[in-house]
Length: 65
Picture (cartoon, rainbow, N blue to C red):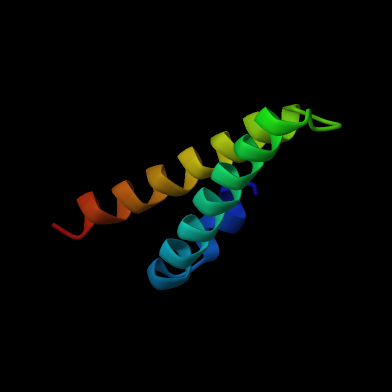
């Protein structure tokens, strides 16, 4: 997910999406430990997407103070 798409989401939607992505990451890591993924790069992409979402949430938190 690119940063422009993340910034378009409302805060509520962003929090829900973040929780979903974190659950997906945990499941993906678990699956990868049992049997290797075809593309382990997906884990890195998902981690970075989560980091972007957290960054946007933090920016909104700081701007609202």
